[in-house]
Image (cartoon, rainbow, N blue to C red; front, side):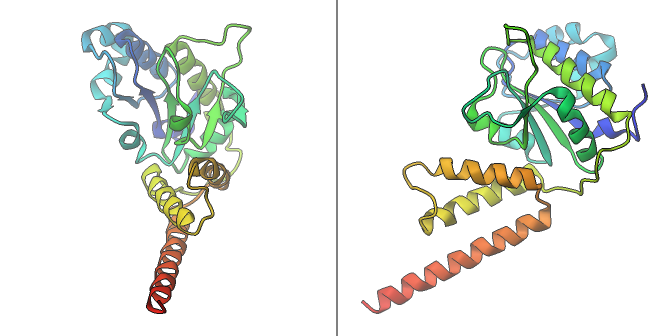
Length: 251
């Protein structure tokens, strides 16, 4: 199996708060086996490089030496244009889940022009609902009864499906998308404006924002789309401020 035009070079494995250094090394080895050479870790709970390197083995040692270490998830994802979150739990807010095989074709189409992050949570509890809000899509690995997988096993399965999909023609054309930083700034702006005009309930605005995030994730916003939406927000801000000034002047 050969990669198509180095498309997997635009994929990064992101491990959020991994607890065991050996798991970081094993995940690096799994990623390397499947042709992925970028690894980031966020707020690792126990980062011991010699132990990680031992599990990575010589073939994947470069991933450990070159990996990026971040203190927070927002910073780790800010340059990424598409984020796929992994979860073993289903139901509630974790809707529209796909298998790794179902997700792989979409991801390969997207990462031909965009940087894609595969986000994995801590070994003991996975990603929280708040952290999954950073994701454009969610993937779950079907299991028979016992849903918990070793971190490196999960990385291997998802990356294997990407490697297989990378050898096929793209399913569709996906343009260059806005990155996570641009989207987060837009969502913060939208939240403030929608609260100001009472579109969101002030007691729990995140319920409404979840629907908005899901809608825009399905659409796939470009950077210029984000600028248009923020321009609308600024105009709403201006209008509401002007209206408040007029009301105050009338006493």
